[in-house]
Length: 236
Image (cartoon, rainbow, N blue to C red; front, side):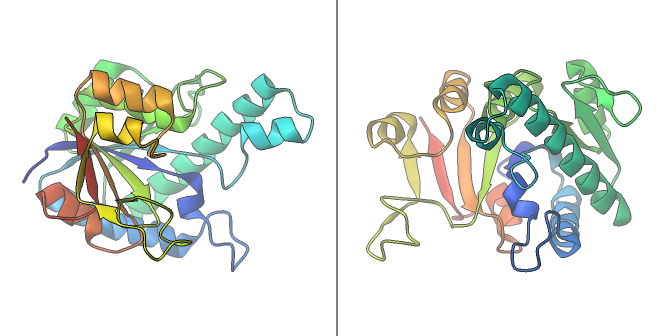
């Protein structure tokens, strides 16, 4: 396999089913469980950072009159709700899972301790990092880049609704061309919105490749793990 330890960045919206009016869709959670089981059986060590946009976003709260710091705290708590839902789904298919949070809440999750997180991974447990970085003004993209750096991840896998990075939005522009591989420098110069600038810079500084792939295509995550031509690879 191309990678061993992976960090998956999963948006809160990935768990959502707008058509059914569900913030967290059990069917999507079940699909994630199946995909993770395949990865673990293939030898992967999996860490996850999940967003909270399906429940609450700090920026949206600010637009509605909520103080930004308060709104971001609410968003971080939303990520914990998603983390617990994901933990339950994984345990339903027999995967040992631990939720670790940047905000202390020992009644529901372990506090984030780097060495402990790495030990969980070595024992074959999936580790879900909730509550972002624990600080306002930082996105869960930044949290993903930070945790990937801390645990020594081989790759940061960015889950999206499209099969990689394009020259334009493929949903709107049918002539958009997909990149198989692109350098950090090219991605910056072309202003491709892969992740926010802080997260992207952290990955670049720590030489962590980013793979942007279609999370909703079952089996695609396993293909990325194997190093097959799936998604777009961002690296040096």
